[in-house]
Amino acid sequence: MREIEVFIDTEEIAEFFYQELMKRGYIPAESELEDLADITFDYLLEKCIIDEETDE
Image: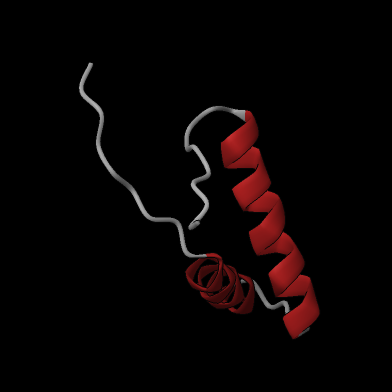
């Protein structure tokens, strides 16, 4: 299996959730979207789908 480089942007995730929730009739607050994006990022880390890299 080859390794690919993927960049996960939590702001992009938040925007995606906003659009999808709006389609379903929900109007989420900005803080709720940030929480959803963070939870999604943590889920991807926990499932080993992504690895978190820190800039030093």
